[in-house]
Length: 195
Image (cartoon, rainbow, N blue to C red; front, side):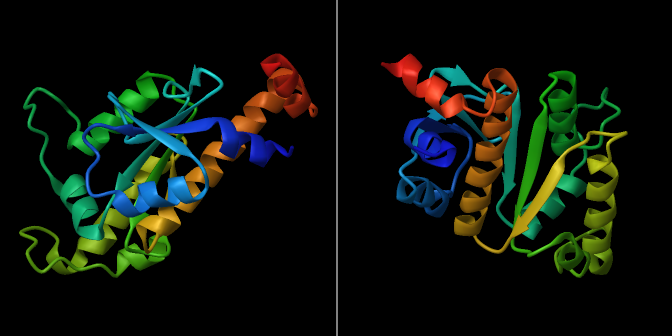
């Protein structure tokens, strides 16, 4: 059995209770044979569990279902007047950093890459309307930098593409973790432990 086959057979994707309108994404999980559980998250929308080990404190994914949603998250004022952070998305990134999460991926639906985000306009925008995409791009690039919140951004057009990439990111993170703990023959060790 390959490491990828082991992962797909034993991993369970975790989905935050607040995550809505993700039917296509969950369908892709099922297509690959992955089970999923609904769970409560302090930060992020997705993580995974495998062989009883929960990765929510190490690996998290946040999904934005459209550029309009991302615009709203970037431009929204923070409801907590005492906070110096701009909005709930930045608060989430700070919680990720404070919690020591090793990998956080922001999945953006509706664009193939960050450059496409620059061209986004929001007709209903009260601020930055025609420049909304440039503002989102600059904010995301600033926040993603290693000396700020240090996270990855993955852009895809559809939920199905996001789901496939999410599985890949989770798999490679887990695989690297297992190689570090058990060496190159970790699948054989894991299979032996299950007997």
